[in-house]
Length: 121
Image (cartoon, rainbow, N blue to C red; front, side):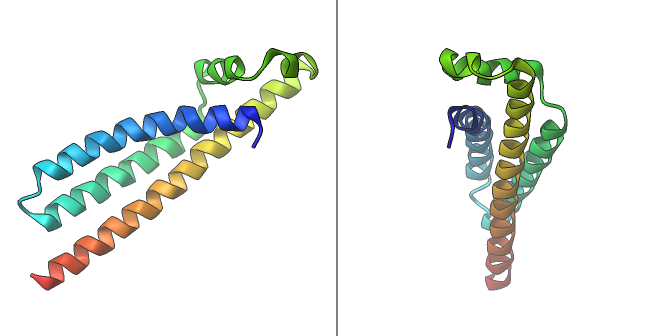
């Protein structure tokens, strides 16, 4: 994994981590009803996946600049600027889509667990 890809993954992982922390607090607040807690967690995770897909289509300039600052300077000088910018945008878009797939998988797992918990009651 090159430094651009690693920087993009860490930037998106921070966002997903903070969002997941909020989702866990909501799920803990609904812990008196396990089905409602798991379903709200699944819905919030689906919302996160939608946000990530939306953001993959419109990558803000500040995100590209943040990834550029994480890449060592000697690597930036060896390539043309336009090729590097295109590579960074593609890398960020792939990272958004990858995290979206992971969160959608987690949402499906939470939803199946809530259905199993609902049938056991």
